[in-house]
Image (cartoon, rainbow, N blue to C red):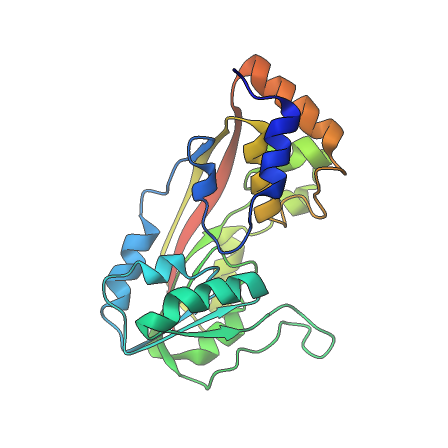
Length: 259
């Protein structure tokens, strides 16, 4: 028997949020993956360097899956539940996890500096950073060191964002443009090695998947709660029941830069 709106929403609203594992969505949502296979590229690169830094590592799941790790592996993370999750995964493998929130402050309007020495790392990586701090990335890289990352691109999953928030201004829609990011990286002293971008199909098969996703990816609909958006969630539930999965598109780009 089909589950009711209230059952689906209640289950998703009570589900745990620690770490950066999306397995809760299996069978309830699907997302195409970029053709470049970032995890594979990252794992291959980690095996070739002596010292690596992963920024905004989430729960450390991508790093922990690497078959070979460098002599020195450090990861940063700002959200306390993810710091704990990453520590549990990476410490047994010899990795260090540093609690660090690089958001802008009154003292540091361009973002809190990374707590590492100049030229400390051969490789800096990140999967879906909120804002790449190019000056700091360039500073902690050794000469000829590499930044390899997968970023979220412009207007990612905006079909879902605009369902809840309405049409977004053009300057918001074009934020995270890869060409703009590369220009900022060059200004910080980095040179482009590779840039690839793709838009990828996402399907949400029930309203519970949407609730869980918006609770996890908190910047999509800031301040999202089930109570605040119950009317919109009910409308979305009825749309999925009538028309099938809710379709959105993520934007991703692979960027490789060299100091």
